[in-house]
Image (cartoon, rainbow, N blue to C red; front, side):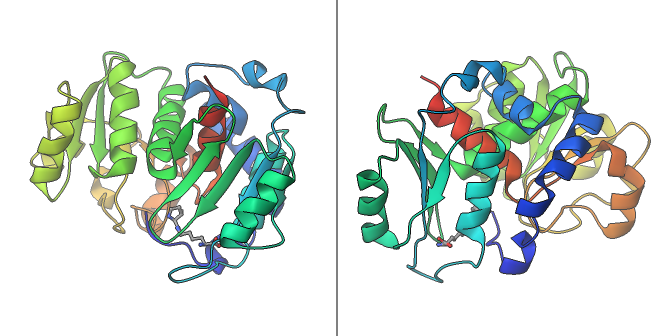
Length: 272
Ligand code: 2YC
């Protein structure tokens, strides 16, 4: 995933209700419903723990340092889902100690390479990449009315693509995976033997109308493929389609910079 900038996330917290209504309109359920579906559950499965699962978000200063608004945005997404969350007043190790002293059951923290949620009680750990892939695949499954028996294309064989391919395989889709580095797809096949290597993106985009765009590149999907049938699930930045295509496919495009990934991470570490 590409590193977020303050300007990418500054308005996420304030727009969560609007975004939730957009998801209901496009996918048929809200953010909690998508994250729960990524685990084969419903939001009702998590209501009982709203009051007991205190979540601490810890700013991390190493590497390129703190991203303005990142921790508070993660906190707001978690609160939007009905849980209690706080951002620690101190950073790094001190922030971790503070979160534990304040009784956090779950912590969220991110350096330049990893963004994880950790359940301090049951030891569950969720990586943002895998959770984002699974959450976006779950959203596409819902938006498409079910991917079972359908062709799905995952573009990008990194952690996000792997999370998406695993979910789609489990849902019974025919999963094609394309990456400019074919080696990465071959490696993924060792873990997910059911996937097919899509060597040629043009052919794959002609054959598959359900697409998870999980690359750190922009404009991966050329506008000539944006027809009435294509459904696109595209996490993170930059968005894998250009502005013009965005307008054409807007009703059938799922895209955000943190929301679905954070929601899926939370529900993942709350599940046994
Ligand atoms: O504010 C902080 O605590 C920073 N250390 C956070 C750095 C996050 C870096 N990662 C990213 O921007 C992207 C996210 C979408 C998740 C994974 N990579």
